[in-house]
Image (tube, rainbow, N blue to C red; front, side, top):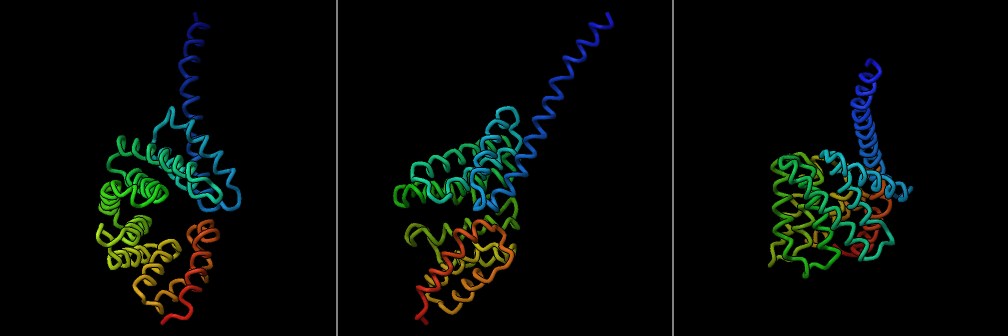
Length: 250
């Protein structure tokens, strides 16, 4: 009888141990994604492996951290150099789906709303602005909600600023509003070179070239960028090209 009791207890305890192991593995993947998202220029293959692991994790554990990390992974993967348009669209769309599930489960959390908005925005940008204007109200609604939930969340100002920068004026774009959003974002995170690049582009478009030069040069001079991979592969290159384009303008 004692042997039977021990066997039953062992069977009951085993799944708990497995759940704990799975939870610990998911936590490790979330932490690994945080690092990989900032250094994907060194090893993009690692990013793909983390994504695959997170896809497995959410089958049994839809914790908000797991969903946020996976939506973020797809956002970064969609922007990797060398991808086809179809591959980028597929990545951003999967990121949208994951983030939407996060919104359903955690409607008051910042992450799901932000990753849904930014993946949707990137999907629309990749698909073509005019073909994707129907998504604009959705992106605006989500980014405004993110700023209501957490006014100190710097990446939201980057997203919002780019929306107002990219969209034509008659359709809701506003360069003055974009500048305000980028400047506010930089007060939250001065090391975010993506926000500073957005400000530089906006100042160029507003023909305030001296101010634009200062912001663009600051990107080139940044010693500790928030996202080293973005700075290395995107922001630094774009800033240098913009500086060259306004070299003789005053």
